[in-house]
Each structure stands twice: as C-alpha cells, then as structure tokens.
Length: 67
Image (cartoon, rainbow, N blue to C red; front, top):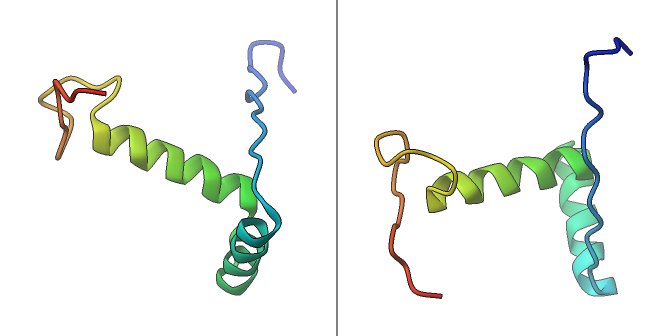
C-alpha cells in the first residue's frame, strides 16, 4: 500500500441473530459483500439526510429536523 493512501476506518455493527440471518441471506442471494452494502447504505442515508452536503447538492435533504 502506498505511504500516502489511508486505510479505511472500521466500525462494528451488532445485530440480533434474526436480523443477522436476514441480512446474511439478502447479501448472499443478491451477491453483495456485507461490508460493501453497509457502507453503501450509510452513504445513501447520509445523502438522503443532507448531512455533510451543501443545500444545493443534497437531493431530498431535510434540514432543521428536530431530534
């Protein structure tokens, strides 16, 4: 790995047995790697929420949402 290239950060996701079985089956049936699909889902969610994007770049962004 080149010296200037950063290693991707890692996270841990905890699922109960039933949720894991569903997710595992979905990934297997559709040919996804679990980590790749999780990263894609996180990016899509953050984009949908408009988080870290300017208002002009965020399609469907919801700003000022109360938590």
